[in-house]
Image 1 (spheres, one colour):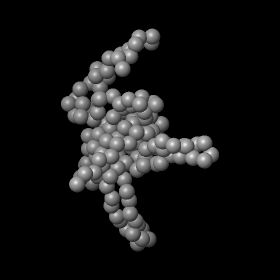
Image 2 (image 1 turned 30 degrees about the vertical axis):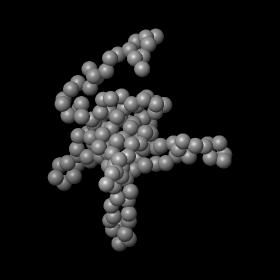
Image 3 (image 1 turned 90 degrees about the vertical axis):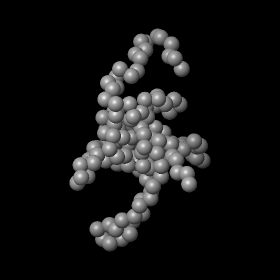
Image 4 (image 1 turned 60 degrees about the horizontal axis):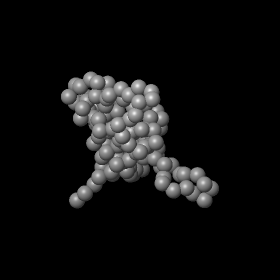
Length: 139
């Protein structure tokens, strides 16, 4: 079986880190992803995709991403069901984030730095070479 999902979009709100009763970090948020085609009115429709991240990935996302920032989520689709407070059965489809990556605002390139680098206690800012205005970019 194979279940792999990659989405590139923008966060719809600042992610809020929460803890489970057993002290495991978790964050849930939505990523706004524009469709590749324009509708009859000439506008692109947007899908709002729910994402959940756990442990180090959740901490990484909350530390480096805010509302409106572009993000690439690498993960898998998962489904779950629960009973709401009125006793109605609810089904949820969401992306379980396995890694989060930075991207340029146009979504055309992804930096290779991802949440794994955070696990090694590396100073994040030292991982990028600063390019001064007017210098050519290496890509």
